[in-house]
Amino acid sequence: MSRGSNAGFDRHITIFSPEGRLYQVEYAFKAIAQGGLTSVSVRGIDCAVVVTQKKVPDKLLDSATLTNLHHLTPRIGCVMTGHSADSRSQVHRARVEAADWKYKFGYDITADMLCRRLADISQVYTQNAEMRPLGCCMILVAIDPQLGPILFKCDPAGYFCGFRATSVGAKHHEANSYLEKKLKKHPELSYEKTVELAICCLSSVLSMDFKPSELEVGVVTKESPKFRTLSESEIDVHLVSIAERE
Amino acid sequence: MAERGYSFSLTTFSPSGKLVQIEYALSAVAAGAPSVGIKASNGVVLATEKKQKSILYDETSVHKVEPITKHIGMVYSGMGPDYRVLLKKARKLAQQYFLVYQEPIPTAQLVQRISSVMQEYTQSGGVRPFGVSLLIAGWDDACPFLFQSDPSGAYFAWKATAMGKNYMSGKTFLEKRYNMDLEVDDAIHTAILTLKESFEGQMTEDNIEVGICTETGFRRLTTAEVKDYLAAIV
Image (cartoon, rainbow over all chains, first blue to last red; front, side, top):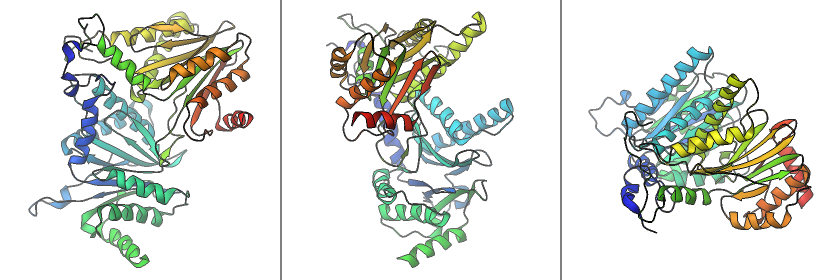
């Protein structure tokens, strides 16, 4: 079967390869791991938590301005993993979409609809040659008025799904295996247990004990459904509790 | 689509006269999860395998069998994100038809329009074909319909068909088991058995999805109903 004039381009733009694969999309996934960071997210019975590493590459950097946790609406938060400029672009687009929904329909967008919208946008980049897929992955958390705590992830392929727990980044395979083991028996996770599971997962796969300044934690709970990031002292409380358990 | 992007098509003829991007898209479909459609005397059944790669996935958060209108539904094999685009377009096309003609869109009309969209993506500038084949089930005027729509934009009406992984053995299985007097209940049974042929592991109500289209309209079966049908097989 002759390949025609498309020979070789399947690795450069999003057209099909002979096996029916999209190489550019697969490479976009590899770009997520390039940053070297891993993020973990877990859903409890009345809360949802996102945890990510905080690596400040230069001591002169103002670490307070460097964050991967973002508010998309007051009630929907997200963690971005991957290429930082693409992440910023996707967060901005998400905020625009959420505001547009509120304007058009008069009520706040829910995290699953926002995730679906972003995934549909990402799909366009996998089908149109003139725009490359984004090299970043977004995990959204919120307390949905009907469904309770929800956790959604959308990736460069335009795929999205709800999760009980998931991870993204350099060590996401190991982190996912860890989470599968811990969640096999479908335990009921309280707020503390959820946060601790997420932190322990990262500690275990990265083989390091964290200092509060090396982690970022974002939470939504049924009692306080507004997305908030924990301060270093609050993170420390959880780290101490984990250390005492062991 | 080609306003600010590429002004030339990426899907071009090979020296042998083939459109290879479409063939590759069909490979993407053949690598997808199996799905099955069966037309019964009083309705149509769609079924698909919905296996998630790990227990961390919340299988209730996304669905493969989706309604387009009250009387038409569809399922796919291939790339999920591409399916969502076509689903959205199909829903909009159906509403646009209703706006003009003030009657629910006939299934064949919807299939013709959505296939036309799929064809555009094989010829427009700077885009690739959709990596999905669709199975569209509908009920108009006391008649059930089952159509398949391919990445090339070609569409076919079927009595029964299978797509995705191992579709050849699925089709062979259906050829043996199909007859014109099947009723919806038997068709559901047969659809599940067809999926079971190529299913690895234990089939449960959480890793398959079934939709039926009858004179009362299209609906996806609840997990409880699927469980009952599975119990009848084992």
